Image 1 (tube, rainbow, N blue to C red):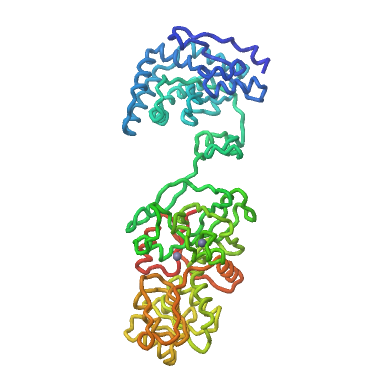
Image 2: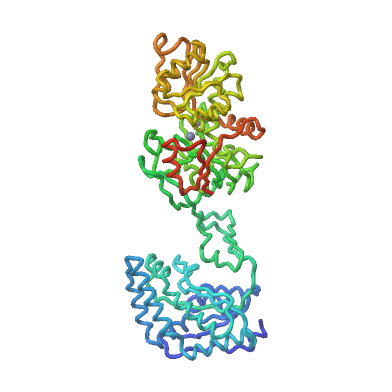
Length: 591
Ligand SMILES: [Zn+2]
Ligand SMILES: [Zn+2]
């Protein structure tokens, strides 16, 4: 670089400026340091500092802020521009746009003085030793890095500029970008009153495949224990432009009972210590979400809340201290998160927790979003053969019947049939699991002809149309007048529970699984036989989900078909489910 500088002209003073605007128009990197912020801007001063520290900085020069102000002064627009910026009070985006266009036009019209043009041409030739070298022409804000302001990415930057005329045109573009909409909005927001000025860096290009920024302090949390590197392919415009700075995501959120979900762009979660962020690739739409949305189950502690408690996906980010998982691992997410310390949690029945923190049903956001924050890695079950979209419904639609059937196992015997009411997603899994885990014959009852056909296809021993007036008598007759050993009610309405209670033999079990708002009335000699047990079964344990996923991955249980929908169609899915138009399970795919 020493030889280059010999061919360069010395600093020249621009003439005819206001007092503080006087100074050299062109300054080479090696003449600059951090004391030159006012004239060379943040970028120029830092490049000077790096050059002086003998770091391998590609050579270049700075067209100073004084040169810009001098040209505006010479054209007679400097005062008018300063006045307009100082008095800027744009209340609307349209007003801001108009002001920006007016000021930019003024700058471009003013152009640069012939002296400055000559100096830039001369410096550019010196930079390339007479050759038309490719350069980057970059705005260097003088107000940057002062008083907590940052114009990162707001002013123009041009790469691969070749030829003196092109360089001069790009310098003018940089100057005009001083009055861009984003800049003006920012100046107004931070009440920046000083006269805008800008230096422009002209620097020989380096072709890089990758570039990035390293922060020795986490810019989002201030954590000095973490080094953050933001990198991108190419020359770093993406990084500098802030396009990867704040990660946001799409989410479907409930803002009030009785409303549809709102599709929103919200900040994506980052994992805290011990936490894991999962990219959601499947989120089963559950009937209980409908009850929550309608306010029939008032469980939401605060609005808005992202619903979705039936999730699977891939590990996207691991919090501090998480072991045994790595990014990209496919996982199913157990959703019945508990407090961890109550009797139920310590005995592994977290779904019964006294202070539940369920995913998508408590203060914790759920999986109708691109990313899901999971509070503990143990809630994740690695998948070996299952696709996350297939696995999602297992975490509730299959887990709930799995637990219910296991609870019923002591009374399920081959010599008495069992009754299953309701063949939605859960009921279909219930039917499969009853057959798989016990030798019982199943009487399936539903009000839809299609569901009854499906029940037959899935191996139900007998089917009963629930719309028939004598449905209860038919069940009695099928059980030889003795009653069924167990009745599993996947609907849970008043009428279905009455049927279940009345159909169950002495010593049998009524399992209340669906939550359609009904209650069970057991009155021996009137509505029920003797020693009939009633149990409202809930969801399942983490251990049961592990068993269930193993059962499926080992081929012991086939999947209930699911229909896949993008997040944007979630309210349509809710409508279809309400009308009974979802065949198996509807799975939302947000990621
Ligand atoms: Zn559910
Ligand atoms: Zn608990």
